Picture (cartoon, one colour):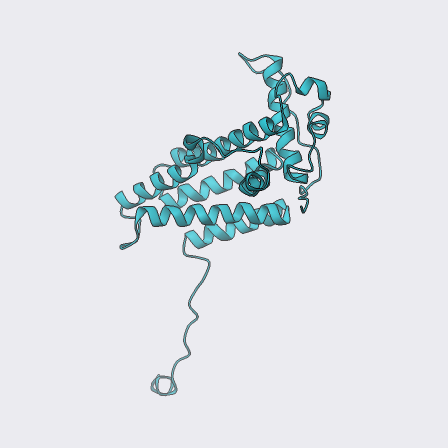
Length: 232
């Protein structure tokens, strides 16, 4: 299995301090999950050990078992957390920019995802490669339906709003548009997993934004015919 690398190669930053209403155990658990995402993205599930995760989280291997009983349990919870974090990033951007067009809402969400990918090393690569990991490792399971449907549901809702506001082109169905956006967004995730370069990912996201705005391609001007030139 090809190993992915992070743009900076740095160990993921651990959450510091004690959040209000939470204890040290909660912070440690978050550190484990962030470290796991980084390790799984860097080396893949099969090549990552619990010791690797514990080391990246700054705890002992024995301490890790106080929070998760297996590597597969860590993977499942990390995937759930990543999925919800990514969807919430899109939803928050959409809510914040509700007065703007649905294209602008989605583009703002994409920009926020760029920021999230830099604050949480490995999240895009991990999420983009998760389906392949689950297929290749029998001990892994798919997410619950309500979590797995979070992304498709967001894009369906966005396209329903676009249709209601007259922003969806005539003849294009909500489900077709939502499915295409989901496919293209997942494609960005997979490309990020492949090259592992944060700047390249950001450039591709912005190219995707131009595609959404109809600014990526243009029709070249046809040269004037000789008769037209002579009459001018």
